[in-house]
Length: 117
Image 1 (cartoon, rainbow, N blue to C red):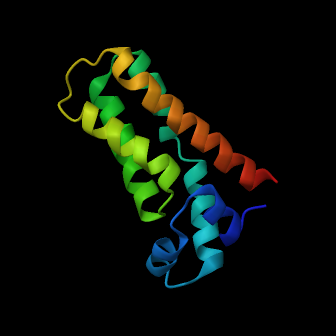
Image 2: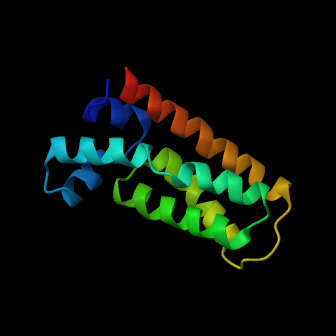
């Protein structure tokens, strides 16, 4: 079940995020649910597969912003790294991003499990 305690266990910096949400837990939890449904989670791997470096960067950068504001650290850290990897908008070898994409996917699945419990 999604609540502040389960998000803390997940690794989110809930204190930081709640400050941004004026300590309104219900608002923060609603934003977390909305973030988990963000289309950029699907756009990022699709753009990487298509070698659309600009599209991949834009998806990663958008995720970085959303995840950073909500302090969803387990997904944020690899999102930051992949954003910086893609920032030059130049070709990237799959070996350079596959682990980061896997980390994002694994952490996102864990978050989804909290939401659907």
